[in-house]
Amino acid sequence: MSRVGRLPVELPQGVEVSADSGVITVKGPKGSLTVRISSQLSVLQDDDVLTIERSSDHRNARASHGLARSLIANAVKGVSEGFSRNLEIQGVGYRCSLEGRRLELTLGFSHPVFIEAPEGVSIEAPEQTRIIVSGIDKQAVGQVAANIRAVRPPDSYHGKGVRYQGETIRLKPGKAAVSAAG
Image (tube, rainbow, N blue to C red):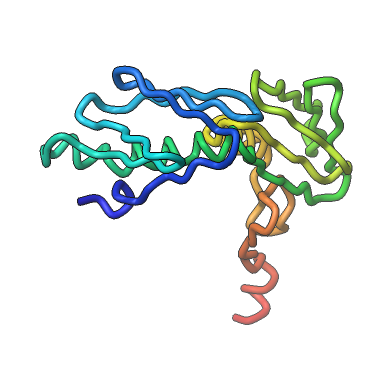
């Protein structure tokens, strides 16, 4: 049995779940999400607890058991609390600004880079060096944050670039440090 798949999913107050032939719909105060699961899995609801069970021990059923439970748990958390990723910008002259739903990044290129927030994801820039990406879909929030970070990932020699909040970058020694030691 999958350790993750066996865990029950607790439903917070105000969250409703409906299952219909492999499509799970989760509705809550922040919105609605749908999750597709394998036809070999079934979702049982008992009061405010969901359990995911598989019909057989077939390899595909075992492989998707834990995944389906995690996707449903993420949908439940998303419609009740939401998800957010915080990014930091480090570097002289590096900054960001928000124009409606469009994020403008000035990251040392000869031109500014614009990133449009997709539907269901909001981008905030409370400071010129901080970005907050939030929404109800964990995958979409993570993908938008990764796209922003990919514009200028942190440099391993100077530490400049866009990084996740709390991310530590191991700085490499430069040429001067190597030649001075030798």
